[in-house]
Picture 1 (cartoon, helix red, strand yellow):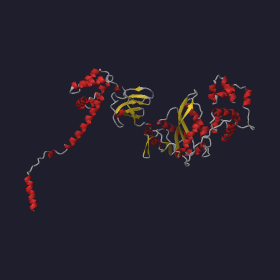
Picture 2 (picture 1 turned 180 degrees about the horizontal axis):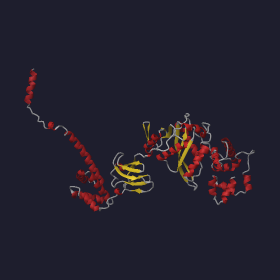
Picture 3 (picture 1 turned 30 degrees about the vertical axis):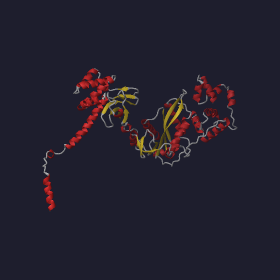
Picture 4 (picture 1 turned 120 degrees about the horizontal axis):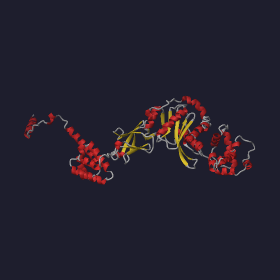
Amino acid sequence: MLYFEIHQLFKRKMKVAQIAKYLKVNRGTVYKYLGMSFEEAQEYLGNPFQKAKKLDPYRDWIVAWLEEYPHLSAAQIQDWLLERHPNLEIGESTVRSYVREIREIYQIEKKNIVRQYEAVPEQPMGKQLQVDWGETRQKTITKKEVKMYFIAFVLAHSRYKYMEWQDRPFTTKDAIRCHENAFRFFGGRTEEIVYDQDHLLSVSENAGDLILTSEFQAYVRERKFRVHLCRKADPESKGMIENVVKYIKGNFADSRVFKDIESWNISALQWLERTGNKNIHNTTKKRPVEVFLVEKQHLQPISPTLSLESNRTVIIPRNVNKDNTIRFKSNRYSVPIGTYGSQLNNQVYLDIKQDELIILTQTDGEILAEHKISNEKGKLIKNRNHSRDRSKGIEEVKQSVISCFEKQEDASSYINEICQIYTRYRRDQLAIFQSVIKKDPEWINQALQKCMKEKLYSANDFREMVDYLRKSNTETYSAINMSNSLPTSKKNIEVTTRSISTYTSILEGIAHE
């Protein structure tokens, strides 16, 4: 069969490397069969066994696969055969026995890999689902290597599995989407779900109390399942999902050639149907697909759609770039000129409501900007009101700022010095002055004198000086107001002053008594 297929593909003008990738065999094997006549192939592939076996028609495939990938297990060989021949009916023990004999005859050695089995108590039906993530590196059809990411689910009672792959790292939104797909695949949810302390789901551990990310908390509240976060590589808590991850890596993904993510996920679901959920489980000695038919009736039903609250992204911090923009989902969004340098650590906060992006000074602070979220990538989304006012020349803006000070000569000297230091950013510096003058006009004259005395030549320094004066004077005024809070009538009471002799005579009288 392999001989004929190689020659047919070669007649279709396929190259040797393409044939090898398509058939999952070594290029040397392709060259060998192409150089043989039919009689020579018959002699080479002559049956070495005394009795014909059920897998003999597929022996050349098995030999070729084992020569190319000596580490393949009998279970993986069986899966590959079923992938090419869906109607083939063959038992697992038959495949193991046949592969073992092939290895002996052709001297194809396999390295023994110790598999870790779970040691957890049996879970009731519908109670627990275990979830974990994994990564692999796959060869592509162009001989390159790509990194693949997947999330795996397994029902703790039946061992019924689900998986989903991506060609990029997972985000919390991806995890939530895959949970929804898994619930639809299973036909419901369990009471409890077990996870690692994954960064997608948890943010910290506080004296034993694990804190979930706000986005995932909203999802848990929506779906009403109990979360159990355990420590990584903890076989007592989630050994079965760790074994599922190993099973997926070692059986489905091992030596599989990647073409595109869509066909890869289709192949993953097909693998689950014919192998992952069909083969007898080593621990339960039952087929997961058969046990699942009963467990499915114990799963909690879920609503077909999520509420807006669970899809809502929580307030998250972002740094302001020097060009007064913030980055969100591969795009840049503008903030008002002068925002950079005005915020503590140049940090603002994003509040995402459906398709609207709201930029705040603090989590509960004032709104800096509002934008509609773009579905494109690499775009600059800019509000015209955030741009510099170019309708006026720099000199005109400068004079407008200087005119706001009492000592305009000092102001002119100070601002001219700043404009020379920040030649390229004169308009930005003047914009900050305008913002401060508009917000705190009562402190600008005092701040000007102090900045000149301390030689602080920057609009940002001037703004900080105004903030300092406002805060310090507010505290002073508060203390004065406290002292002035006494009633006026008591403030103006006149106290009578007596001579010392008066008190002496009183004391003498007390002594005589």
